[in-house]
Length: 336
Image: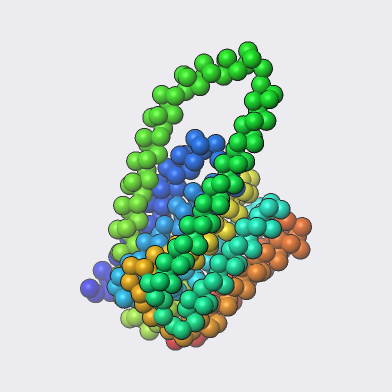
């Protein structure tokens, strides 16, 4: 491979990742909405899973190619980019409202699972049992989230049924009967989007990893920095597009849920899956400054929301963006 083909692989891979993730998110959100799930839960699970799919695919591809530094650097960089870059840009466009529940539950969980990486990575090696443990924690969190969603849906349904009148209920049954065919057609389309999206993610991730590693090494960057910058920003594009669109439409629950949920997915699902597929070693810097920057950015996101009384305003957005720019400058200045 020469530099021209490497650049084509990198750019083409990132474009495929972005477009495939958009298809996956579109299909997944459509399916979730038909289940009657709240916007926050959609953001924390389905949207987060869809927009985190590029990170999953890219880190797995890196682990298979014995590029563990790229895999972990991608997770750190994506988590930092999600909260500081994407969160900052969204707050600049329109102040973000954060639910009290999110501030009390989901954001602390995001920080706690990030802290779980320390005992797994402090010895500079991720083993298969450690990967399985991370996936087990992820499975428990998903089950708890699904249980919470079903409980909330049941309560909402019971309240609705109490307020319904018999005549409106009969009319509603007729309307729902007429809508069943449309729902079936839409469901098939959503499933098709999910399948195409997953296939595109696998292809795009492999292309992006190949091109990024080659270009980064040619210009003197380490694999860790390649993962923290080039691949991390590229695989965060779905989060950027989704959260910006949600923010513009005033869908704050989807925007915040997407960012927080994506970081949880990245930390547990991405790292765990990569470690299970192929255990790998990492360099010292990934348990030093870069790891703690990820933790500090997560805490800063929560702090900005707290001092803003559950609103991340434009001043908070500027602070997050400045933090991200400062970290990028540090990475390029100390790219060893």
